[in-house]
Structures are given as C-alpha cells and as structure tokens.
Amino acid sequence: MKQKKIIIAITGASGVIYGLKLVETLNQHKNISTFIIISNAGKKVLDLEIPNWKQKFSKYNLYSENQLEAPMASGSWQHNGMVIIPCSMATLGYIAMGIGNNLIHRAADVCLKEEKKLILVPRETPLNLIHLKNMMQLKQAGATILPPCPNFYTKPKTISDLINQLVAKVLDHLQIEHNLSPRWGDKKLFKNF
Image (spheres, rainbow, N blue to C red):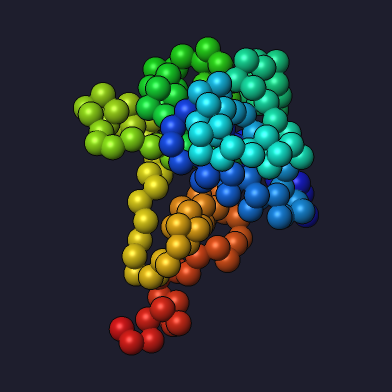
C-alpha cells in the first residue's frame, strides 16, 4: 500500500488536544507519515494546555512556522492533505486573503492552488462577520471548514469521547479508516430507538 503523507498544523487557538490526538491516531497507521507545523502562538497554547507537549511530539517530523524551505511550501511536493487543528481566526484570515508569510499559510495556499484536501478546524465563538466571510471565501476556494461541534446521540461520557468524535470526523474527510467513535445507525447505540 502506498504511503500517505498528511500535514498537520497547530495554531494559537485553544483546543490543541485535538491536534495531538489527530497526530497520535494517524501515527498508529503504518502507511501514514505526518508532517507537523506548530506556529509560535501554537507553542504558547501548548505550554498552557499540554505542559509536556515537547515529549509527546519529539518522535514526529516537526517544523516551525519560519521554515519556509520545508517540503510542504512547494506545490511539487506530493501529499494527501492538510489539517489545521485548531485553526485560529488569524491563521484563517491570512489563508483567506492569500497571504503566505509563514509555513502554515504557505502550505495551506499550496493545498488550495494544487486542489489538495485542506481541512480547517476553527476555534472561536461567537463568530463575527469577518470570520464568517473568511470561512465562506475559503469554502468557495475548496477548503473544508470543520468546527469542533460535538454530537450527543453517541452519549459521550468523557472529554476524550468528545475529542475522539472530532478527530473521527477529520479522519472521515481524509478518507482514513478508524474506529474512534460510534456512527449514526450503530445498532448498539440505537437498540431502544
């Protein structure tokens, strides 16, 4: 089976645990290589939310936002998609405007121009009109906007259940098999329905 390459970017928004869970899940697949970009603001949020994050990420292909010479900055580098999880509104805005002044913005711009899968997991509420317009512009350009909105028909019992739901949805959009979360119609969930 051909090796898949997935880019994961973590930006300066709360919810970096989503990104970590996605990285850990993808790295359980032998045929998937992950390439992780962490923004400077993302590192600060990681310090707040996951103090031992450097140990957890030490075994992965890590890039900083300033490494514009990295492979994913070029359209000639082949990969199978990019996920920005969580995606700050600043990052979303830069990408919507086509401003590629760091590796995350540039890699996302490359995804759009090369018509590769680009998934943004925005973390902000409430949304102002500028946020909504930027999301609409990115959707029209081909990006998938996937906010972390939990479902409750699966009867989640823990925060991990909620995190798994979102990561499962991302994996579905990347067309990667998983068993992280039950699906609608699962007979075990709906035996009394």
